[in-house]
Length: 375
Image (cartoon, rainbow, N blue to C red; front, side, top):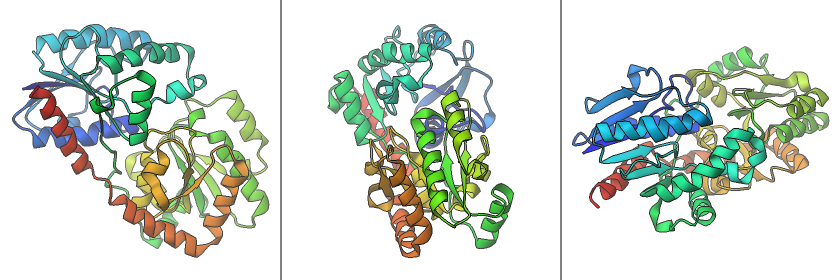
């Protein structure tokens, strides 16, 4: 069978959550199913490392789809034309965008609907595009895959989709994430935090990730603690706003808040394994891959008690109300001061990490595809 895949988010050294899911699943899926031929549809020149096996044909179509108008043109014209040209039996879209014009069966991976819950966090045109098209994508899809039971219920309820048409395929952590020796931890801390321990946030610096409250909680913690500890925010600042800048400038301990910008995968795994704790406290999350990365690295986790995170973390993390600044600060103090708690969280994290596997997720994805091809 001919299977076309939207691979526009396979970008070397620029993959975030959806890109990572795409990479890890396709790397296994294409090798595990040599009986099918996969057409990878790129919107720009691609890196050869993404051509995982001989049964893949890469195709560059259209202009780079990085703007709502180009989203529309790419999916409705470039993708629709490509699907017809290659006689595709199935189109898989790991970022949820579909071609409404095409009659080919389509599998949409919709990771979450955060834009429905927090539309104010998005630029006007992108928000309008999402609100108009994603309900239509969900109804157009032959089947939908999502990454948590929380997101499955959210998609089904908001868009009135039969839950029997929605499958859950979990994320996992990159295999690079693992504990480091004390000597290497010392080197990493010397590089990033002047040798001091640090709390770590990983991800795009954007409102949905609750950066404002995280910084305010860290400032409150530092005011009440004698421990010299930093807060490192590792991620792109493309969503940085005037409000975030104002909050940052108001901090008493703003010199202890460190922005690394985007870091490569190797440095990111070392940065994680050298942290005193992961402080990942978003308002809304469809899954939360950094939580598993911390578990795999032997690092305690402070995270939110909302949306999908209790499902993913269970009892292996300290879960707090993301709007409770004092509660976040208290969790920071507990993790830093209570060695027994730290050890319990690390042990529980290692155990919880065993419940996730890219191999198993790719196998489940393969089963979903086979079911679709046989109907």
